[in-house]
Image (cartoon, rainbow, N blue to C red):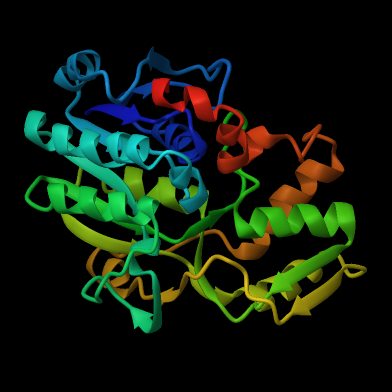
Length: 315
């Protein structure tokens, strides 16, 4: 199968291309290198913007399947330029659905559920609280009648591969960094839940089902964890770390727990990587000095793009 990995130079894309390299599939990456200055991974690469429809059309003509990872990711990131976020996250998927009839794997987000009590499955009502979640939900709707598999992802963590930019705006990753370097974790509120998932488990699911006949919507996560409990789990790896819990609520109002029973029962998928695995990966990177400057804005989507606000319309 010929597979086009759109956004394949990113955080999820790094893990996806590693998994694909161990299969018989032929694949190539299509990416604009928004956060990168180069792409040195030894795989076939095509530079391009997902909004350049004539350019990407030529690549889609080659592809039997497309893994669509391209997006502006995160609530704060999309709030910088909501119109651009709609163009990239939503309008491009609408165009894809009207111009491509092959197999599609699409990554959405569990944040489409917003703030709700109880355990949420794929039939639960949605309540997006951000431009990011709203654009992802709209994209899902475009894909509902296509040969598409849609994964609503939990909050990711861990190391993707040896080439992709590490994300330090994800709660497990950033807590690990702060525990190791600062010896202190401040938790605002802490009662809010997040469904957590290792980035390599996303990649495994994507590649495992790329050539299956399964379609539709599936939640994808490993476990639901309260933020305060996560802080203490991180502290288990850094015993001298102090956890400060404050009653002040964090501005992020999302709070949700999800069920992934549908993909467990229908597809037989199971996650392989634990939260502790991700903590250990990040800890090792820091302790072996493989991350030179963890506070560099390039590791954080919102902080990096905020530097280029006037130029963002040209991304």
